[in-house]
Length: 355
Image (cartoon, rainbow, N blue to C red):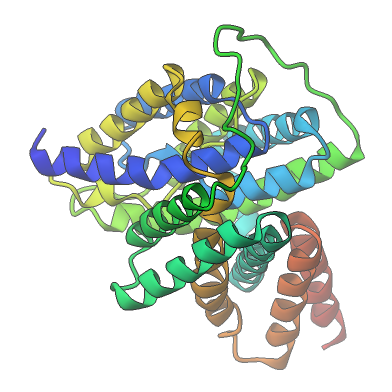
C-alpha cells in the first residue's frame, strides 16, 4: 500500500459523499448501505476485481424517481439486485446485450443522461438558489479545469453549500436516521415495483459494461470481468436494500489508476463503511444541502452521458439504425430505461421484417 493508493481511495470517497447525500434525500438509510460496501470489498478481494462499487448518481436518481415511497424504492432495488445476480451467475448478460445490440444500449444510456439533466433542473423549483449556484459552479469548473468530474463535484458541492449557509437557506436541518435500529424491510410487489426493477436492471446492465470496462482499462495488469461485477454489485444492492439502504453500483473509479489498484479499491470501500456505519453522514448533511449535487447531475447527464452515448448510438450509419436509436433514447428519457429498451427492440425488429 503506497501513499498514492491512499490518495486515490480518498479522492473516490470524496466523490461519493455528495452522492451519498443524494441517496439520503430519497430516504435510503446509511448503515444498511454500509452492508453493501462490505459485500463489495469482500467480493473484490475474492474475485481479484479492481472495479469497486459505490454510490452512483444514475441509479440513485432513477430508483428515487420511480418509487412512489421508500418501501417501493427499496423493493425496486432488491428485485433489480436479485435479477442482476442471476444474470451474472448464468452468464446471460452478454446474451441480452448481443440481442439488444449496441445501438439500443447506447441510446438507452443517452436517454438516462437526459433524465439526469431533467432531475437536476427540477431542483430549481425546489431550491432555486442552491441548485442554480451548484449548476453554475459545476459548469465553470468542468470546462475551465480540464473536464475533471471529481473536481466538478467537489467544487459545485462546496460552493453551493457555502451559498446555502451564507444566505441561511433552510434545507431541512440535515438527515435524521435511527442508526441503532436495523431491521429487515419487507419488500412489496406491484406493477410499479416490477417496472422499476426492470428499468433499474436495464440501466445497471449498461452501466456495468461501460463503467466496468473504463475502470479496468486504467489498470495495466487487470481486465474487467463483467459477470463477476454483475454478481457482486447485484448482491450488494440486495443486501443493502433488504435492510433499508440505497443502491451501490459500478463507478468510474480512479483507484484503478493507483499503483496497487486492488488494495486502493478495497480501502475506498472500507472508508465508506466507516463513514456510513458510524453515522457521519447526517453530521455532514447539516452543512451540505441535498441540492448541492444537482450541478454534478446536470454535467454528468447533459454534458457527459448524452453526447458520449448518443454519438455511439447514432454511428450505425443506416436510416433504420437512426430511427431505432432515436426511439430508444426518447422513450427512455420520457419513461424509463426498460420501456426505452423494449420499444427500441420492437422498432428494430419491425425493420428486420419489413426491410
